Image 1: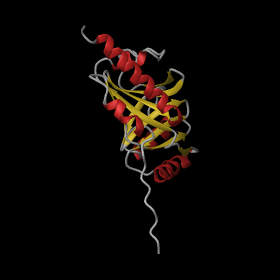
Image 2: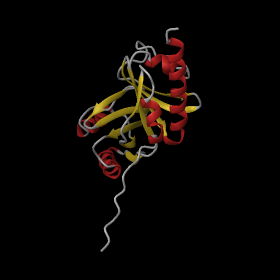
Image 3: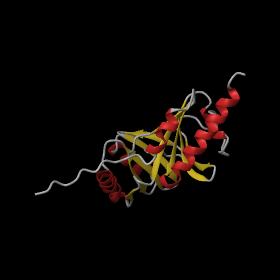
Image 4: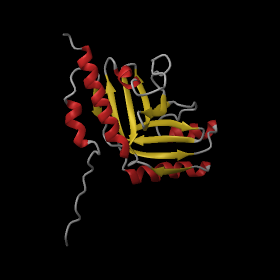
Length: 199
């Protein structure tokens, strides 16, 4: 009997890794590991959110444009009755089944969206300035501090920005636009470094 072939997940932006690693100085831009993700739709009753959060090892954000930590990932509120839940430990199929089973008694449902987005992590001084060149929302820490997230545009691409700290932001972008976003960030980071270099 022939053994089943083993499939290994390859990051959709692997071809851009070298360009990101070659960026001089700060901020740095790295590829986030691939994670399992589901889109959760459920009535935002406080008791429902509390029960789901407890089952997932954290809390689900009650306010718009916010994120919280759960056991192996994040819960990001995308709309009045919509959350993006990620897991670094579960497989996509298992994560969808688990969250769907937890949501069903509350009239909710979960759908696997693991292949929909990839993540970039931007860290270091100047990270908000780097993003602000092509993003129209107020990225100052006072307006977009840790615990906030926002759906917006970077150039012509829809992204989800996640604030982990003053100098630590994540960009989640649809896979089909990910190369475009990385290329814009690399071009701008290179141009910005050239302008800041001593003459």
